[in-house]
Image (cartoon, rainbow, N blue to C red; front, side, top):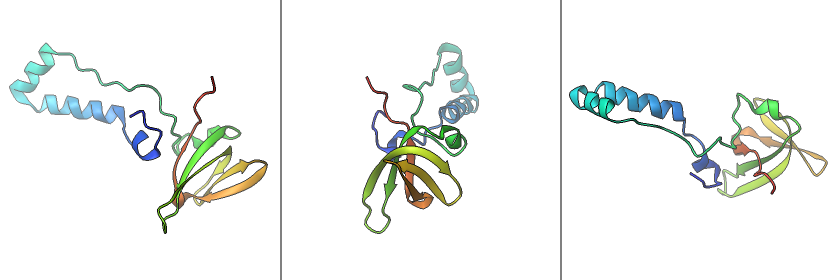
Length: 118
């Protein structure tokens, strides 16, 4: 999933995938035992996601972020880049070129860090 699109970049919880595989092997009887004893299964990711979720987002105050929003009436997506200020139950607030911009959380598809500059 090396796509920059918010919808395809997130949503995978690698620990849940690993737990599901282990559970299937445990419930697989003799076949599950055979696979477990004769193979090593590794579940990995290509790296840490740039997507910021609610549990950590407010620790990124003052950082540059990219917010992808959608207009629910037209379906048009918009990218907003700015300095993250705050996220509460109602809105996400950025400073964009020195101006405060509040985005309705219902319109926000994702918030992510920009790619590092080379």
